[in-house]
Image (cartoon, rainbow, N blue to C red; front, side):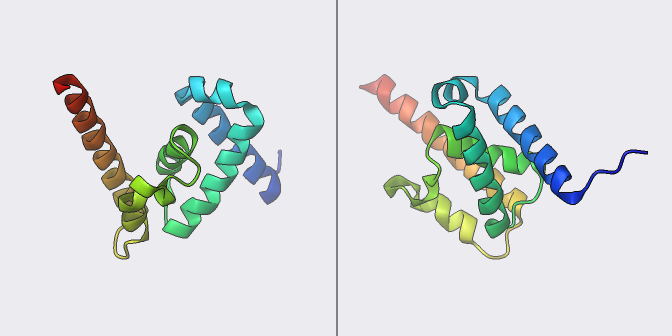
Length: 118
C-alpha cells in the first residue's frame, strides 16, 4: 500500500491546481509562464484561506481572476467592490465567489454594451 505524506499531498494538490488553471486559461498561462502560474496558485491558496474559500472549484475561480486580471485584483482602484465582498462576514466562501463572478459578468456585459453604443 502506498502512503502519501501530508507535504506530498499538498504538492500534488498544488500541481493539480496549476494544471487546471493552465487548462482553463491557456493564453495568460503561456504568456506569463509556468512559474508565474505556480506563484499565482500559491498566492491564491493563501488568499482563499484568508477569505474562507475552501472548495477546489472556488479556489480555481479565485486563481483564475488573479491570473487574468491581477494577483491583487481586489485592491485595484476599480476592484474595491470585490474586496468588500471577500471581507464580508457571514458569507460562505462559495457565496463570495458566486457574488464576485456575477458582478464580473454584469460589468463585462455593461462594458460591452457601452462599446457597442459608442
